[in-house]
Amino acid sequence: MSASAAAPHDPVVVRAGDAEQLPEIGHYLLADAGASNGALSAHRIQLARGADGAVPHRHDHASELFFVVDGTLEVLMGSKVITAGSGDFLVVPPRCDHAFRAAPESTADALIVITPGIERFDYLRQVARIRRGEADRDSLLTEQHRYDTHFVTSLTWQGTTNASRPEECSG
Image 1 (cartoon, rainbow, N blue to C red):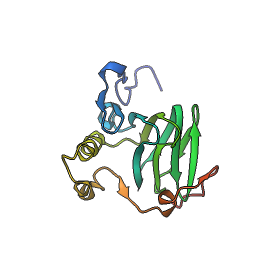
Image 2: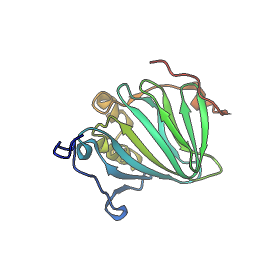
Image 3: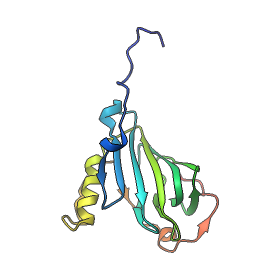
Image 4: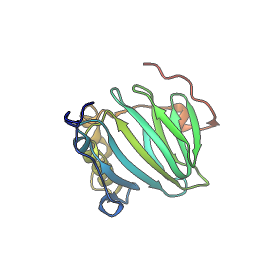
C-alpha cells in the first residue's frame, strides 16, 4: 500500500470510560461496523459467575472471535461446548451454531469481534431492554436478518457437557 493510498477507515480509538455500557447484559460497546467501514464490530463482555451471555444462534455472513481476558467462558461451537480460560482465543466460523456464558464456578471477561462487521449495537441494546423487562424476546425474531443473528435450538447447550474440541461446523 503506497503512502498516498487512502485508508479504508479512520483509526478507531475507544477509551474505556467512553464505551457505552449495558450493565443488564454485561456488555461494553466498543466499535460498531460504521466505525471501521464494515471491517468489524467489537464489544466486551463481563459476566458474573455462571451468567448467560448469548443463547444459541448463528451468523450466516460473519465470523465471531472470542478472546478471554479473564475467568472462564463456556462456548457452544457446533455440537460441542468448549471451556476457554484466560488468554484463550476462539473463532466461530459463519453458519456455525454457537452460544456463550460464564462457567458456573467463574466470572468471564472477554473481547468479542465480529468480522466483517455489521451494525449490531441496536441489537445489543434491544437485548438489554428485554433483560430489563421493557421488551419481549420475540421482538428480535423479525430482526434476525438485519443483524445476521439467527436463533437456533441446541440440545447440546440445553444439556451441557464440557468437551475440549468442537466438531466441524457445516458451511
